[in-house]
Image (tube, rainbow, N blue to C red; front, side, top):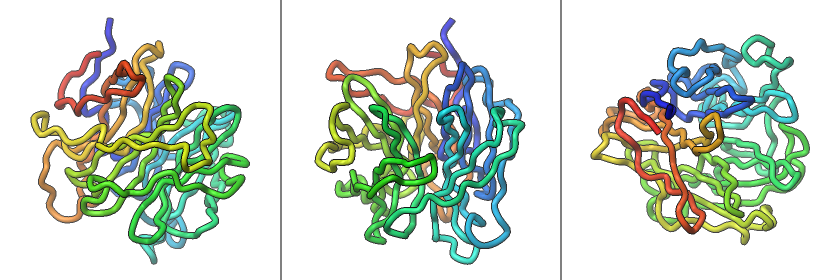
Length: 314
């Protein structure tokens, strides 16, 4: 029987990160108040909606990590659980920096979590959306950082350990195309795929309204990932608003698969209406959605378009 679930999978959860570990799905995302990190686990995508949540960390009262707690990602690295997230300061709300938590035991829902501190980058500045990945026996970190201050670029560096860079970062993408510069000049929310001889990074671009959309970078699997010239970019968005399905501003995605690994799944947030009153960041209705995607004959992903809310079957 084909897997089925209902979209949105989890309501009012932006920047969703869903990973499949040992046959169990683990989910985390930005909460509407941007003041805490929670996780949940389930045996199926459908089970996530009603799954118990665990509050693993709450924002500090002041100083670093006290405001704008954004886009957590839950990863298991070398047998240990880590959460990567961004947070700012209540006294300086746009002083976004990247931080790491580590679970002190093997059960992320029960065992305590400890702060491993800030991921320091050579150029201090607004940074967020850190995502780690392994390739060819090396571990890397990709993230978004403002440099110059007016635009958010994507950077890549090798890791010495899960919270420490091993070398100088390389800028692999800047918001140079018109669709990446609507409202704000943004490349952010990187998410990794490896298929068909390529390392692919999906990312999000533009302001967080209906213009928000996904782009795609890629490099050959044998290329030097720390060489800017190894990376190529799609000239057009690969996933964007679908008015006919009432899905607007899809993005800040992650990737997983069905439990058998046979079908790739795109995890993303979107709103079901175009017009937003006030600051889009204060609108809580970016809901987490999951849908299958396929591959073209040339080996590139075909994400299709956002599906309408309601029952979904592969």
